[in-house]
Amino acid sequence: MAKCEICGKGVSFGIKVSHSHRRSNKVWKPNVRRVRAIVDGTPKKVYACTRCIRSGKVNRAV
View 1 (cartoon, helix red, strand yellow):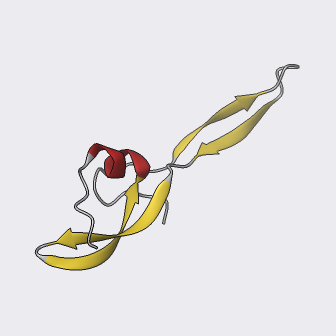
View 2: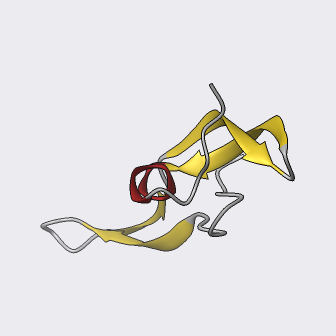
């Protein structure tokens, strides 16, 4: 679910390092919202990240 259907942004993996330098795995998830958008002329629910929604890459259906 955590993948933007517009730009393809997905989860990122890395290592969280504490002050005492203990390391553990960390996951960064994109801020994905389910919105009604116009896809091929018909309204459809898609998962889009908030950056695509703000920048106007998603044509919202009213």
